[in-house]
Image: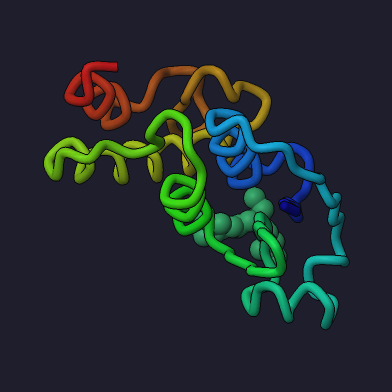
Length: 134
Ligand SMILES: N[C@@H](CCC(=O)N[C@@H](CS)C(=O)NCC(=O)O)C(=O)O
């Protein structure tokens, strides 16, 4: 079995895919792509948006972080990455999107979600985390 993750170190989306791979215990090769490599014909053939991450599994390529995580969940054994309960699942997606957008804005404080460039927690994020019981 061959698994490759095309990505850029420090990218929150790439980290999301890495977390999924780690949770599932999948061994993979990390292929580092730094700009301008995102927009080369070779990478645009993998992802027409010219972005990372892209996952390659035995020649099958998938892009978009949420699609990668869903693919990992459905393909590999190990802990479930997404809730099977519809209501919990419905809240997992906004939670993930929120975490990604807030953390990308403040990469230096990745462990502490922030809002509008300040160190105050985003009120929406806090409410979402409370609702998710996290
Ligand atoms: N919706 C995409 C977003 C991916 C994304 O924006 N990746 C950034 C790195 S964090 C990227 O490749 N940027 C290159 C560009 O926008 O040209 C996903 O969830 O995977």
